[in-house]
Image (tube, rainbow, N blue to C red; front, side, top):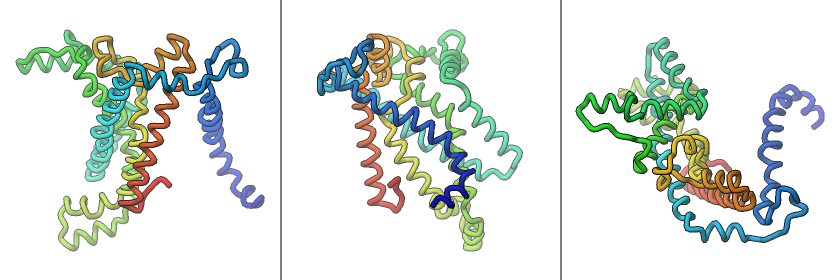
Length: 298
């Protein structure tokens, strides 16, 4: 065993930074869950704060905001899953069909770049593009003879705006893993299908999609588990008081409760509650996947 570890020391050193990251930023903070069962005082610390059991969990469930927050978070996550998950698959399939290598690399580069733009800049660009007075989108709407739309103050427009910006920002980056899976498909399968007279659509349906289906299933399970874990930053930057009815989600509520009001125990309880829901989602999705296919996370 020692000899094998010594032989693989260089690989272990490569894994070490990733391992330290998860230990420091993912596993060690789990001990903070204890705060959700306490009447936590920042100055007394964990050892000096009194235990209150499930007080803050009950407070959240009985809160008048509970069902609104749950509904908004769930619907935004479902919209992102339904429209955002297929987008990188479609992009990868389209890029795979391109014969011009130069144009293919150009499209890949252009689609990857938005991923490296911060959420602050992205939200600023969205605000600029959708401005009712100077935004390019409303200029186009006006040129078509229609009334301008103030997208960012209409509650019903928040979800389409958010999901569209998410797709634009991450579709190219997320397509990388599908392109890698496509490159692993044996070219002889395409040759055999072509000899059998299969059209391009038939090859896509019978060779390409089955070849990347394990990757699609694994990522779908992970995405289902993240339905309730909507990122805080972009929602916070894009929503306004007029869109709270559809835009206020659990993570923004946790921010206001924990940092603005200083109620750390209540905020932690809400976050733990969200984590439990996410675990139920990913466990259920994995179990269903195991029943209907041979692919699963565990």
